Length: 87
Image (tube, rainbow, N blue to C red; front, top):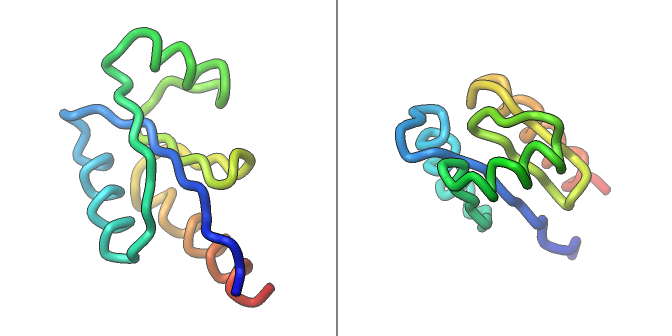
């Protein structure tokens, strides 16, 4: 059995793509840690880690970074999950 993914997401409460991402992760039974980009220190942390301050941002295992709309992120996240399943 492969190790569990470590998923972190940076979101805002007013972002519809953030809500869609969280709902999708929950339906996939993928636990995640959520960071609130409305807090200045969290926004700075996101910028330092990823180079962007947009919502949502998804970081998987500290190295796979996705940002942009949920639709854009979903295909990349699904591709990564398929790679991990076959490993």
